[in-house]
Image (tube, rainbow, N blue to C red; front, top):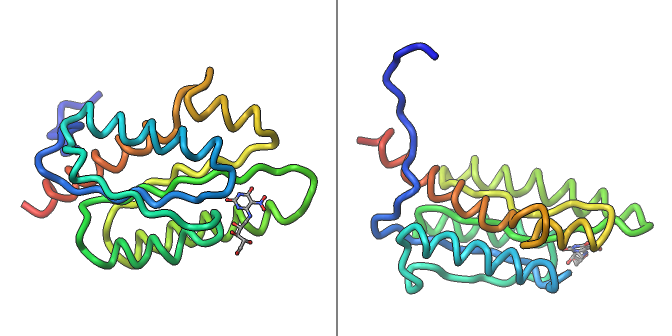
Length: 158
Ligand code: INI
């Protein structure tokens, strides 16, 4: 790779505050994502007191709460956590699609990093695999993406 100056966010916390906005629907999965996110943040230096958990009914409600939380400017980054499991209804496509585009819009509108830890899977088993099972923990991965982006934005400001 070319020898250029690289600007990126470190995975080390320095007093930043985080909000986790989590759906209650499919809580068997989502609670594991939340646990993974908290564990990852704390292991990278975030104080427990600097993490707030905000609950909403389902993934469809995530964008509204996220937007409000991000615009409050009380947090350096936010993580959206949920699980949309396909089952056999077309409801899935509407909930998952609206959720993804709304989360992205909340990030663009607020200028605050919002990580997307919303699983979209065909089965409960696939979701559990990604919530601390054999495919890792998407909540933890996304919490670190949020920390990295919070640090990157701070570097880009300075
Ligand atoms: N909400 C989810 O978070 N995951 C799902 O899989 C899901 N499904 O399949 O229906 C779901 N529906 C509820 C939705 O998010 C809203 O809470 C509800 O429609 C009220 O607005």
